[in-house]
Image (cartoon, rainbow, N blue to C red; front, side, top):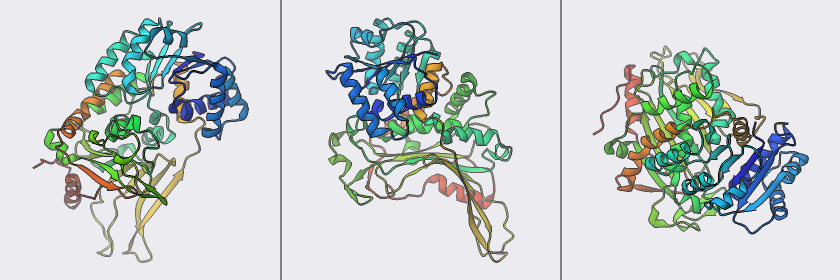
Length: 477
């Protein structure tokens, strides 16, 4: 286990909100002991004493859970280096010390290539590991170039392309629920499942992140990495083990099976929008284009929706819909598995069986199953719901990821070929949107999103529920 950590971007929001609480949680749970040495590198003209003051301030703001002694230990273990992280000499000072080091790039993605180049020249100690936040690159060509740079720096198993979604308890229980329960896996296929929605809708708006978000947008920020990762876990074939090779091989299989979208597909199967002025939870919110730091001419979307199909034996005919939006009226963060209708109802005409829906709630974490039951009269159908809450995780998601990095277990990180496949899948969407083939719609902040429309797959599903026939992939007009 590595006991040295260097955080490039050590004064940024990611460090303050997530990495510091994660380190404190690891210390409190006994995973770090007193051996951890860690360095924060930033552009501020600080010394270590001032940096430790800043750390204490961030713990006050962002960590209400870790015990005081754990926070104090993490604060005392820190040192600070003022650095231009693209300059080899500064990077060498940040990673200086005895033995291998885990280098965490808590930086904007655009800085990854020059920082990795600087690490090449800074003589990274043997056995070291490198951690990169999402999104990995800005397009397919960028991801391929970055993979080549990394391959010259460290072995693939020492590269951790982290996505904290993969360390969330509910996300891991998508696999657990499938593979540990005989009742689910036999029906986990297109014969029984009509549609799977993977949704991350949030009431949060920019929250001061325009400098990053306006260059990325909802498609790159959420769908290209987080939601495609969820798609992989939902749709993958059962792996032989949960070891890094077996698990990551099966994830790549899912992305490779996804049908490439033509321009016509993008027009019919994707949506993009951004929020206009509105009101959320009693507070007025300006339009996205009026937020500080936003350049309206970029036409950045705050809502993205993509419909996919997988060309595989298990999933041919099931629709997968990925959606994420900001500044919406309600938080909805879930994987919703919608089953096909039953073939016959012996209850007359007084009711209709609603589709059974299995929901993996991501925040708050839990499970829910929507069923249809019999009411007071034997021919009356009523909706039923079964819910279960999960125990709070022992470690926060970033704590689990950091522990995997220090231990050298890349199972929950994204492999290089997987990162490239994710970009390959969404490049036709990015290209068509750049050509304005899909209109940039608007929705009021605090609403349900852009005006509802009937998706082609919705009409197809209704037709199939009547015929009870296997799904035939649609031909688009």
